[in-house]
Image (cartoon, rainbow, N blue to C red; front, side):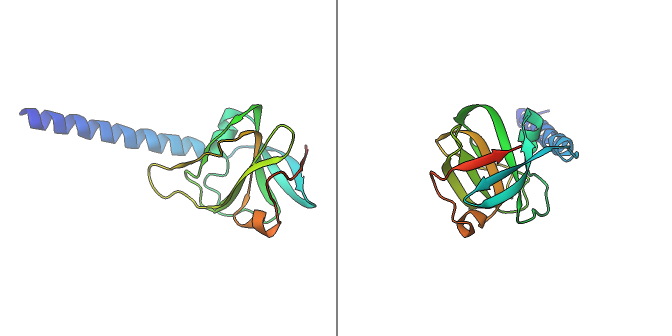
Length: 156
C-alpha cells in the first residue's frame, strides 16, 4: 500500500468516526426530557417556560422542536453569572435569545436568530455576563418591545 493510500485511509476513518460521533450525539439529544416549568414576565408580557437547569437540559435546549407556542419559551438557569454563548445547532425554529443578569435585567438580545443548517454552527456571544438566558419565538422581543435594561420577573 502506497503512502498516499495510507493517508487516504486514515482520513477516511477519521471522517467516518466524526460523523458517527455526531449521529450518536444527536440520537442522545433527541430523547424526551421532562423539564420543570415556571413563568417569566417582562413589561407585562408573560411566558410559560420550561426550565433548563442541568447540563443535559441546557445542552439540549429547544433542539429538534418543530414549533413553539407564542406564550411559551425556555429559561436556562446557570449556577453563577458568567458569559454564556449560545448556538442554534439542531434548532428548527427562529428564536429570540435574551440574556438576563443576576439582578434580573436584560443585558443582551439576539433577535430572530436563525436555525443553523450547517455542520459547524456559529456561536452567538453576548460578551455580557448573565445568570439566565430566555429563548422565545423569533421576532417576539421586538413585538413585545423588550429592550436592554428591562426588569425581568422570574417565577417558578
